[in-house]
Length: 203
Image (cartoon, rainbow, N blue to C red; front, side, top):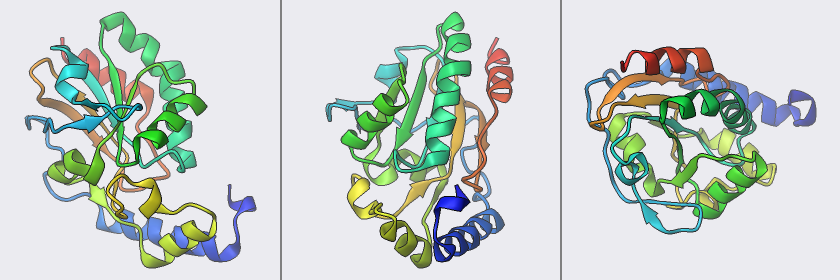
C-alpha cells in the first residue's frame, strides 16, 4: 500500500499508528464477563436493529472495524468470510460486523467483499465507547486521509472522527462477553484460529 501513497501521508499514518499502539486500550476495555451493550443499530438499509435480535438467543462473534474506506478492514472481513464464517455456521453461531459508518458504507463493505454475515452501523460508536475501545486519528492523519479523498466526517454516521479499535468479541448466549481481542494497532487483526479456539471454549 505504501507504494501508492504520498510520502507525507505515509509519515502521518505511521506516526499515528505508533501513537495508538503506545496509548493502547484502556485498562478493563471490553472485559470478559461484561454484558455487551445493546443500543439501536442500523442495518445496511438504514433500518433499526440490535445485537440481541441478530443473535436471537445464540452466542455470536462480533467484529468492530473502522469503515469501508479502510483497506486493512476489508482484507480482514474478506478473510473472515472465507475462513471463519463456514466454521461458525457449523455451530450455528452468527458473525456480526460493526462500524460507525453510515448504512450505505456498511452496504458498500458487504457488497465489495461478498459478505454473507450481518454488517451494521453503530452511529456515534455507542457500543465501542461503552467498551472503552474508541480512538481518534490525529489531525495530521485526518488531513492526509482527506487528501486521499476520504472524509471521515462524511463517512461516519455521527459526523465525527472517532473510530473503534479493531476488536473481536465472542459473546455467549446470555449476551455477555466471553472473550475479547483488541488491536490498538489498526494494521493488525485477530487470527481466525484464535477466534475459533475462543468459540470452542463456550462448550
